[in-house]
Length: 378
Image (cartoon, rainbow, N blue to C red; front, side, top):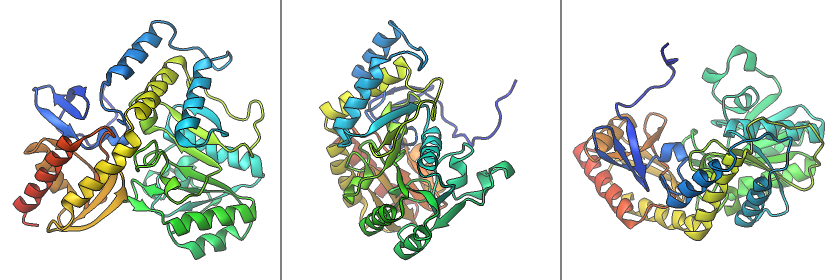
């Protein structure tokens, strides 16, 4: 049997990782400024993380949600403390797409409405409902087509208000920083307008923090830069440092009913142990503030480099528009300077390093970035 050929793979196989570094099967070291697509938050193979997972696995790794699991309660308490949303409830699942799927269903259950307002260039996942609010027809199968979804431009306040004033929407879903969409940052004005319009029309405000959340932006959630509160927050990626965990944080104004949501694997003992370990490290090592500081150093270090046409983002979710194709630039960074980076679009480099990077890693990246730009004649 062969693998289903849907991924474009780099000619590189990592077999070992520690902190912000990877090693391939030939022993070559790489600096990881991609973080496995924003997943690695506390660094690879963090000792506390490895210890807690190993310890839990030696006790019990899984039982269904038909029984009490005190680890779920512990995780909810830690998330409430770290995020400032202590009065919210937590629903655990397996992925970001599943988190968005459940958030949208919950909004529809609560309001009794069918329509959702999403943002152009948005990416919310590939499952059936999540992909309908993803602005990419190429990944929507015919069965995913829906006339119940409308799209407006991110940061178009008037278009947002005009749509929500129709009063027929169950939810508006927003990535406060669009990842796949090019590291486009929602303005404070836009998020505040969304909050006000949702309040006025009885619409649920969902903030998708799957890529930009969990400290990556320099605040626990990226929408917190604007001072708004979302009714529902979805997260995944960095919550468990590579263990598949998704989560939905739900306002106390939204009632729960037995059986309205459910999952087999979500919130297992092992998954909770992984997520609790990450929460411990994020707090103990002050990784949210570190993300803010290191992100600013990266941005300042590459500002003014010839061929850099724009830099966007907050903390350690950064998009750099280049005057040359990002694929060519990334290839030099990877093959000559052994630095892993991400992409979005043809000309945008995407940086999503672990939140624990320090001055040494930042300086190495800036030096390699400047050298690559010079070599490519930017």
